[in-house]
Image (spheres, rainbow, N blue to C red):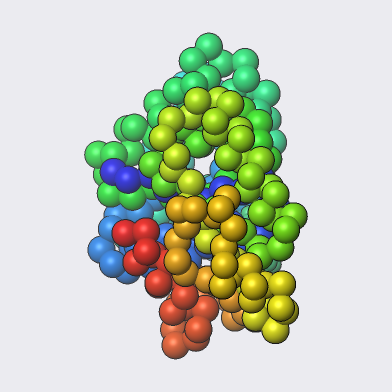
Length: 243
Ligand SMILES: Nc1ncnc2c1ncn2[C@@H]1O[C@H](COP(=O)(O)OP(=O)(O)O)[C@@H](O)[C@H]1O
Ligand SMILES: [Mg+2]
């Protein structure tokens, strides 16, 4: 089983939209996909039709006292299953920090799913605490949406320093430009010549698109309600760049 995390230090950069659409593309391509919504806000779960908190407890999960597999739910999409978010996930950083084997905590939780799934996608909350460190360690690809602005690039730099400081291992970061607005010269310039901190990056730019905002109305991946849109094509290309 492959594990991909969709992660950024920053919020509102398109992580959840990317996680949901990549999960859909991978399932459509034949993978058995489990999307784990690690965010207490549960937006990925909501996009996939799950309204309620799951009743999980971050404390129990980290302590290994939860049979996580029992909480997996099917979605409307073939081969795409969901491990829903929960409000208790606000406590991830504290609970992982407390754990004895915090370095391995996510690997241990993820491993049993490899019997059933060929791809695990983690939709991560923003931040750079104990959960982020565990994610950076556990995922073989860490996909980082970066809005083409200096501040977003600075945040990416910070993540790179965090990776180095915590000896997370070989660099798994795969940034790509997200929410790009080609009418803006700054965006165009950064996309044309990505700065060093972007390397190695996924050579697919996801444009700012109202179709992506409309996921909230449809509660579905873009390809389900706008299959011929540019946004759907770009998510497909992003999946191909990773796969
Ligand atoms: N490429 C995009 N174009 C337009 N809107 C987007 C795009 N990506 C995400 N959004 C919208 O921006 C908001 C934040 O996106 P989201 O994926 O939830 O970000 P994050 O998970 O990083 O906080 C949402 O309302 C989403 O619909
Ligand atoms: Mg999100």
